[in-house]
Image (cartoon, rainbow, N blue to C red; front, side, top):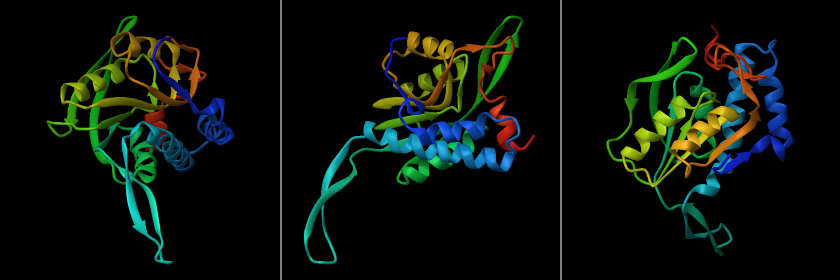
Length: 212
């Protein structure tokens, strides 16, 4: 695999704890959603390193000066509906200055293949700065590729994909088209099953998050 990959679960025990709750089939939708938000909070904190920042001087209550940071560019967090809703909430909790966009896509299975059909986009015509595509399950990579295509076509300076779990096949497909796009994820799983779900994965994230 070729692109930049940050796997939070490799170095952060808290990420593995969140994954334990998300992977467990006995986890109900309330805890599943809260765990997705927690995953988003971690991802947002790590992704903050990709932003451009500028120094700003502040005066403390002791009338002393301190130099800290504030964002130096626009940030858009784009959720791929529908499991991304709590994930986006977590990312934006970490990065509250972010603007929010939405992309809706459906998987169309055609025999042994699957393609992605984007049917709704809620984004500015012109994107500046950093765009984060929040796609909880980077499985085949089709949705990620289509979403990055849209963000780049609208002028994003840099695009990042944030997922909870990524499959190796999806990463390879994404980087075959967009080798410059970093991926931040909690875990990388080895394969897809015949229905194109990540294995071991966590099942259908959309159904589990929405309570279906």
